[in-house]
Length: 336
Image (tube, rainbow, N blue to C red; front, side, top):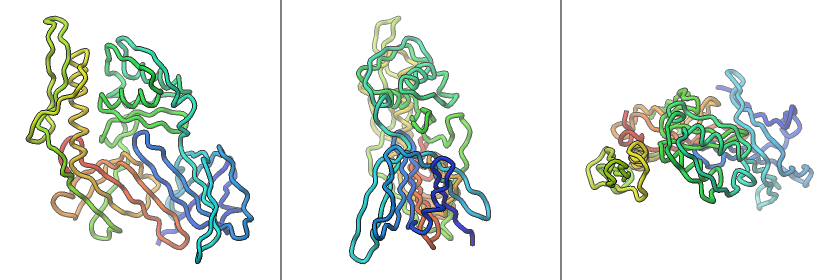
């Protein structure tokens, strides 16, 4: 049996040295997209002896197993604390910290336009306006955009919308704005994330559901042909039988329309199935990685993109992660 390790650093100091006698547990949520990763630490505060945390304190959790490896899990700024007691329980403190504070420059409104620029150029400038650097998947970086307007939108909102139009997902964290391909199981460098393998035998829990959502055969996006002056449609298969899903806003070029239609088709496919798998925690797992399911049977066996990984630590208990998944962008649920 492996020995779980949970460490919590503030600067160079491991707080678990002084806090170990008070430690009740911790929870970490890692999500794709602009959802804010969260760390919570639960402490026994009998007699109200613990000092209050300070807003903005930077905490860096490390976790793993003494017999294998212990890895960093990110950096989180303290956002708030809670104090309380319930009959039958202990007086307790909970510290809540988040990977990004959605305030200041990252949420400040602004207006600017971009002419004939690559997606990397545009998002790089947007990231710098929020005090961040850009990391973007190479396949997305070179996409050319003839014209786009940021109208009274925050850097994070504008970047999220523009990336989504081309099949990308924006993830701010630390001092970077990362842009990855939706459902690809890769990081912002285009490198595959370590796959998560789950099996029915020995599973700690699982649930998968097909989503009764409208099925579409195609997605269509309009664009204006400058040669003929006519409005035309770019269409992409949505992988099912059914009506056409028409995008509302016209695009400036055929390439933009095709990219928008393909991105929407991939998004629709992810809505056809969802669920979760509960498995032993591994510090190498990251939200966005592909989950390989086997032994569950038809409709579940195959590959699922992960959307969220929630992990909890408690004294004397195994460390388990709940991995939320969606259907693959390229096909139905559990499609290998």
